[in-house]
Amino acid sequence: MDNLTEPGLGAIVAERRQLTNLAYRLLGSLAEAEDAVQETYTRWYAMSPQKREAIESPGAWLTTVAGRVCLDVLGSARARRERYVGAWIPEPLPDRTEWSGARSSDTGADPADRITLDESVSMAFLVVLESMTPAERVAFVLHDVFQYPFADIAEIVGRTPAACRQLASSARRRMRAAKDPSPPVAGQAGLVRHFKQAWEARDIEALVGLLDPDAAMIADGGGKVGTALRPVEGAERIAEYLIQIASLAPGLTLLERTVNGRPGLVAQHTDVTVTVAAFDVTDTRVTRIWAVRNPEKLRSWNAPCGGEAKEGGSV
Image 1 (cartoon, one colour):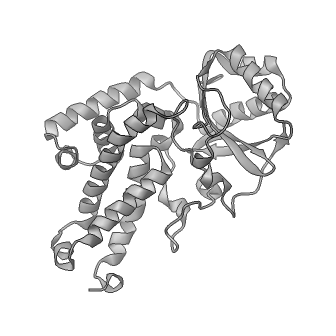
Image 2 (spheres, one colour; image 1 turned 180 degrees about the vertical axis):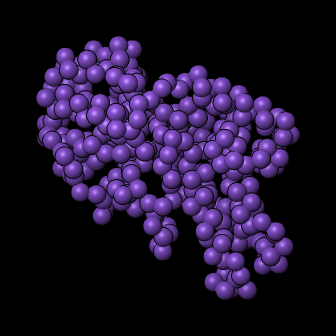
Image 3 (cartoon, rainbow, N blue to C red; image 1 turned 45 degrees about the horizontal axis):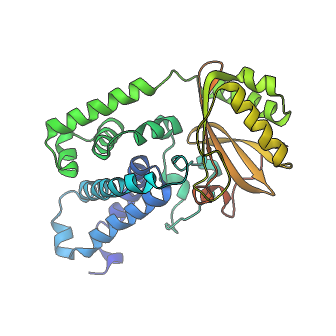
């Protein structure tokens, strides 16, 4: 039977968004997530029509396969990231309304719909996921984020439901230990705006005042662009580093943007996005800055038809 006329094709295709949401959270990379979803569909269509028709819940089958594919990728990614130059930070995502559609393989779908931006896709959340074992990560994301029962997760992870429950519990403890109370989005937006203004003005005292004394900035250049290879720690050191960047890169434009569902900043040079910064904040101070500079992770910010600049200023 031709794929285009196969019964239930629409329902199969409709699972792509859910699968991409899952794969991005598991892998922290949109490029790897899309590859994992493509591999899942390849395995589906590699079966005979008779075998596909015999599957009672195609959505559950696709999720199970996608979870296994991601688990395999996570196992190999750990070794690859040990060889990565500098810190590895999850790939940042633009706001749905600012998505520019890089790497879109769904010609008939709005790529902005493929990732639901909520708390479980914030940079702080994804960074904690990176500290988990692959099995912990899969069990936690599937159960706590996507509400899958442990019996189904057990089939993906290859362990008992009780063991999967323990994995999710361990991951939950990691998440609670790392999570600081965050202000509402509006509060974070105001703090990030003040941070932007202080950086543009090269006001080191203002920057220090906006940073927690124990703040840290982690940068990801992937060895492809110059950046700090180790975390920059402490308010004064971060402020000095940012002022130095402003001096070395005249004409850099800062834009307020939504990064993984939270207020962040984008730095552009000659209309090209060169840095995307995500923030973790308390009520009054910035505690973490994740600055992604690896151009391979900025494709969705630089593809044609991207959003026009808003409220920009030159540094």
